Image (cartoon, rainbow, N blue to C red; front, side, top):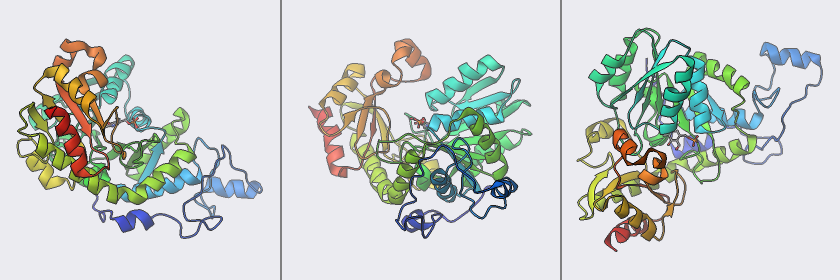
Length: 397
Ligand code: PLP
């Protein structure tokens, strides 16, 4: 059954799950920059392996755990409303390790169309080489999902909102379909909403996987990933992380933990700017379509309004000038920078056909449903009015 734990607030994000006093009496949990951890004697070693050691956060070897990383994971579990959480060197390290921990040859994986393309490539191309089959379904189409499920389906990987069209499926309804197949698990990546906007475990997901590179860390300066869920499932993933070595570095853990302190404040601005920009773009004479779940014209507006507390600062729109129009907007903005990613202070903009789907060419993009004139804007933390004026001004030029 879905878990329901108190929604995080600024206060809980800043205080919960962190020790009241740390070595050295500083405020943040310090960076323990060590690849191995020594024991006073063999009795201490035995108590560590028996799980009776007084210091639960101590490490053994850096690939399995580290006090700075462990402290972050405690906070991530609270943030996700989970029994347990694990951190990784990147969002993709989190996703690939999770998938590998749960799927074996002969099994089947269902993915959402418009999901993160590296996740899709990993399942369809890499795992395809190891005898795992896959199907891709429209995010909100429950009939298509039910038809795609097979007795050997082990995983359904959902995303909400998706990228770049910001689709928000009703994940509770998705979870009900998934549960009809024995052994099938629902993994949800809600990176674009952040856990303040949407906590997948409360909506029937078995595991929540996200890129901490984005809103959690929040400054465009570090890569990281997170998996949260029940102790049993997370421990399967933990075991494999020890073998794949996809562990988060302690300095990165420190930066992500620092990001959590300001997450609630930052999300207010990201969410507000996303809504304001989407409104300004919709109906603009040089915009064919604007995509953001806050818009009534968005196919998942009602679902987003019901289940999401915020859908983030990523907005996409289709320029009436096609690819040339999309490029012109990206070249004319003065505040936004051309670059991939989202979730940091600086607004980022990209012509999606080039930045994310260059290799596919126009035909490949058409097959994937990526329009040539699509522009993605990831609103940063600048003043909302300035971000809106920057993008609209570039369209008007
Ligand atoms: N999931 C989503 C929705 C993403 O947008 C991304 C990256 O853009 C990832 C996962 C992968 O995260 P990372 O870049 O931290 O590996």
